[in-house]
Image (tube, rainbow, N blue to C red):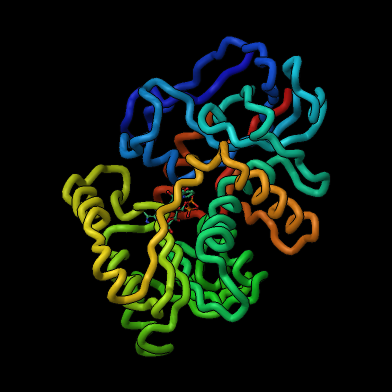
Length: 342
Ligand SMILES: NC(=O)c1ccc[n+]([C@@H]2O[C@H](COP(=O)([O-])OP(=O)(O)OC[C@H]3O[C@@H](n4cnc5c(N)ncnc54)[C@H](OP(=O)(O)O)[C@@H]3O)[C@@H](O)[C@H]2O)c1
């Protein structure tokens, strides 16, 4: 019998419930996966709090990505067979011991990667890849600022930007996080709790030194980022972490963050020769770009040019603990849930 950690109603981390799942036969083009590990994403926290518009109605099982072993395949599946080690983008439903997934969203898990690494790389590296290579089109020598540098997406983006020969700036909420990012190649770190990043960069580097900014924070960061962008610079916005602080929803803070994101003037973009992209990797899963990006990422892993940086792992039953850990900003890298083998 399969089981899952379900969000029964929106709220604090203790809303998680362990529920039994009916075992489902895979459809003709589906793969049934015995999950060994699943990735925890910041978006899971937002949807648990009721702040993620695309989340299904409660009750639902979150979990965008898993790694595991193929248990069964549908009649038309040709690329996988039972026993294969795979990773998959599940959209939802990954916090479970078994999940069915479209064949096109499944990738082989390279031999040298563990299940935990496999479960922790798809969303982070896809987001970072699309932002840097497909949207910003980074080039060697570009100056790139990455907010949340020590998080899952942040460390993936740092590695990809360094691999492309960029100069990387990053923000984080502690010196320890910045020190870690420096070991991964970060050129210039800013502790945003101690310094305003705009003043810091202006004082120490220059008025508008940046070619690219990756921003998952949102709110007032949008206007601040633009102050540092060169003409023709690009801002990639892919989150609004600023909307929450701790376990409680602060309606005023959430509204302020949203309002700042609604007001972007095309006239001012023209005037400053800047571009802004919005990125939602979930909405890209069905497009060919994901297949090509996935292949490119796998190649970078095979060549050992990048790696999945794991923060802590938690047993699947402790999904609530994992969420608290992420929300308390304790992670450096990716948080992963694991399924014990009997
Ligand atoms: N649009 C997309 O397609 C897409 C895809 C993946 C991720 N994202 C977004 O990218 C961001 C990073 O995601 P992730 O899964 O890699 O998470 P993560 O960065 O591994 O973990 C969260 C980190 O975010 C920072 N943070 C900033 N504001 C926070 C807040 N209000 N509460 C808690 N932590 C906060 C903390 O680092 P500091 O201590 O350094 O502040 C924390 O350690 C999130 O905003 C997420 O929604 C978007």
